[in-house]
Length: 110
Image (cartoon, rainbow, N blue to C red; front, top):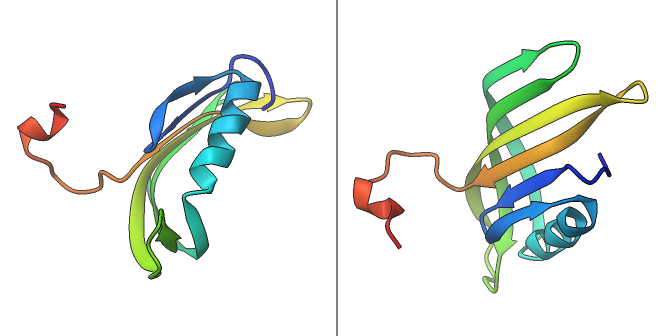
């Protein structure tokens, strides 16, 4: 969706709100990945109603990340929320982060 209520959470910074900020954040986040591809998706959960849908999944990919020169496999825990707009389902919220395994409690402290 390109509406003002869209949101994006990514592993490289705070949440983005509104289409303008979301597209800027997506471009910045995408610049951290290069020479890669998606290798698989693990569907964790999904729900679809007439007004809203979501998917929760683990996305598997390979990419050069940041300044690294090697292609590295990685996984992202991702949640995407959709709504129908003009007859098409559009993403209105996406959150992705690299936490796909159990973490110690103190890992949430900064």
